[in-house]
Image 1 (cartoon, rainbow, N blue to C red):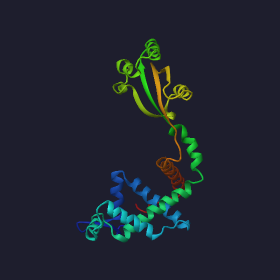
Image 2 (spheres, helix red, strand yellow):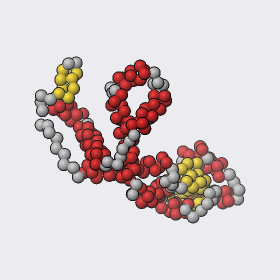
Image 3 (cartoon, helix red, strand yellow):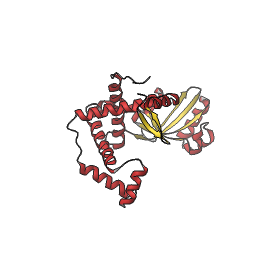
Image 4 (cartoon, rainbow, N blue to C red):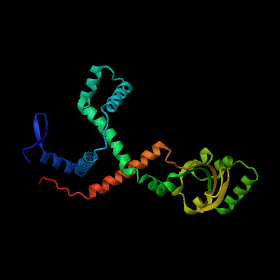
Length: 252
């Protein structure tokens, strides 16, 4: 192994063994090996699935779109870009094609599990937009509740009395995951409607009044959310595949 060079620096060869030592010293050997194994598993799976085929025209159109977007339509300028990024057209085309294949592979692997996984994660994916007033004692919280119910401005009372930083924006918390809410707060919010007031609710040593602004229910119709869940499932699948492999580093 000592005689095998991985690269040269100022005409000096660096052997694979020395490169491994450098990676060990920097604490990045595990990350380096992990990425190799990851790509190995993906490549093996793509070779096994003969149905995942990408038309060259799709990759070529994607490259054309990329060149237009990045102002690389001039052939010479594009060649310079390829050189500056340490690649050539053939390699770049292969990388683009692999990207399309990878997306198809993710869809194939996650398709049967996606709906169930979405249901499992839905409590964390659903969000509620709420405003709040947090104070240190129940008596004050109850007094503020009464004032709001009599017509006082929630926003003004939040600015005057709330002890949290969001008082400067009228107590507006923004979207909050239902799954991260304390159980008693989530239970109270789940049975009201937008515009309703919830509380006072004791949270640790404080008391909170909450106004529900809007419910944001998660849906697989949301393309970005669907892709995020597919990515999570794919990473789980990869981790399971890698865990079953026997890996040996052939270096002393």
